[in-house]
Image (cartoon, rainbow, N blue to C red):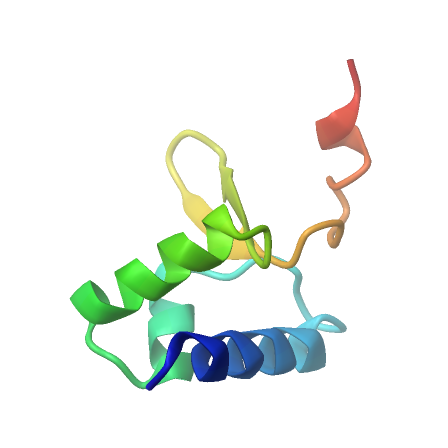
Length: 79
């Protein structure tokens, strides 16, 4: 699967699921891509670097989401 194809698949899938939740575990993304974790990790990391996805961590949990979505998106950018 090419990067652009993976990008489109992730964005489409997450957009459809936004009504239910805004943050997703890495395993959710690997399942959407239908890839083994090691291969999916490279694509997910590239999507984060390109600003397509944003990384979020509570310290004990790491999740990913589309930028600007979710209840905490406004609070995260406060000074």
